[in-house]
Each structure stands twice: as structure tokens, then as C-alpha cells.
Image 1 (cartoon, rainbow, N blue to C red):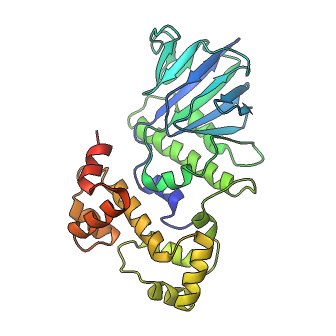
Image 2 (cartoon, rainbow, N blue to C red; image 1 turned 135 degrees about the vertical axis):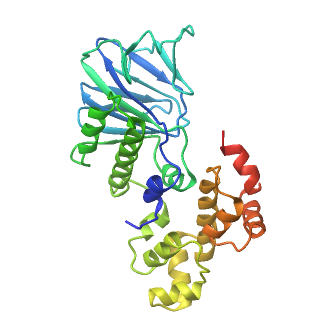
Image 3 (cartoon, rainbow, N blue to C red; image 1 turned 180 degrees about the vertical axis):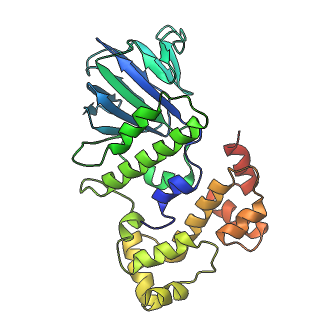
Length: 315
């Protein structure tokens, strides 16, 4: 995997910070209506079975050892059976309420990051939800179906066991530990999913395996501040300029310099989420000689200035 491809971007850029993590324990008949609109949610089932019923009609069973990912902002139901009517709603900010609006966070609490209707339920569900996603990771999230399921023969679920062991602990630094574990689970799951024949990853993701185009992609992704040209990339890949431009456009769906610009702007958008980095420093890191040059490119691609973007994405 490239040092700075979109999967690595989940770990190296804006990522899980204070993500919502919970062990949910249930017995009997139960169902939740999920309207939290989190950009990405992980659902794993150490014990029992759950059913995810998406608003698009898709119904997905999740059994022990399985992992499901749901993509926001879509709504869906989770319960013991597809026909069970929800009695609880999960709203943005992971607020839990009854159908009449009564808050349920405290009344259904079972301890540290544990919630449900029974301490030792027939079904145990681990939930991890991202509050936001950076632009680099979002390049892959946009290519996911609304719900995916990976079974034990399709991926290595060892990380879920570790996450399950850690989620109810209350040690110093525990939130950071849980955030990193959640990131690792997601990266592992995405890599397994996009390697499957039914997956439809972005063209540039598939192209990373090409010996010529993959090298050019990694050079741009790993070193965005370099003054890359098609000729320079072709020289590094040991092909002609025309050959690289043709093959890159065929496999990725856009010319090399167009891809480089979009990658740089996505990186800049992620870096601007960090309040302590100046626009000038962002420009240096993504290959623009001045803040003015970055601002012009940013406006051309996104329609707003870097400072306007920063105001929109920072609390």
C-alpha cells in the first residue's frame, strides 16, 4: 500500500477523534431507527445476530464474526429481526430517544460505553461511528455501497476482538486508543472489501497496481509538494511522456495533472481542519508557492477560499 494513498490517509490525516464507540447489549425483541447520519459507522456482532434494514430496501444479516459498514447520511434500522418495529431513535450527535422524544442515554446505560436493555444480552453489538471524515478518506467512502458486510472468511476480524476488549475500559488515554483501533478496523475492512470482485473502487485505486501508472500515482500522493510535470513523472516511471499521459488517462479517467490538482486540494482541505496551521504552511505542504496560488486553485476547484473552507469545517 502506498505511503500516502487514501487508506493511509485515514491514519495520517483528520481521522477518528473522539469517535462514538459503544458496546450495545440486547435481549428479546428490539429495534433501533438510526438517523444519526454519521459519515461511516462500523457494526460488529461478537454474540447473537442483528439485521440491518436500509431505507433503500436492502436487508443485511450480521452474525458473529461479521463486520458491517454503513455509509452516511442514509437512514436505516437495526434490530433482532427485519420485521421488528423500532422503539428507539438515534439522532445526529448519537442522541438516543424514545419515539415520543424521551432521552434514553442515561436510563439505558449499562456502564462505561455500554448501553442496551440487558447487561448480559443474547446479542452484543459493537458500534463505532465517525463524527466527520477527511477529504482523503472520503475519496474511498464515496465509492462504498450503502451497506457492506464482510464475513469471517473475507477478512481478518482479530481487531474487532481487541476493540471489544477495550471499549468498556476507562483508563487514561483510552479515547485515543479506541480512535486508533477504530481506524485500523476500518482500514482493514476497506482493503478487504475493495479487493473483492463485486467491489467498485475508484479507477485510481485500481490503477495503483499498474506498474507504470501506480508508480506515478504514488509519487504524486507521497510527495505532493514536488513540482511534478508529466515529463518528470514519465522519466521516473521509465516511459515516454505520451505513453504515461495516455495510460494514466485510460486507467484513472483523468490526466495526471488534473489528478494531482484534485489530490493537492483534498490534502489542503484536510490540513485546513487543523487550527494551528497557517494557509501559507498548507500551501508549502501541498505544492503551491504562495498562499495566493493555493487560494486561486482552491477557489477554482471548490468555489470558496481556503479561509472560507476553514470556517465551515472547524467548530
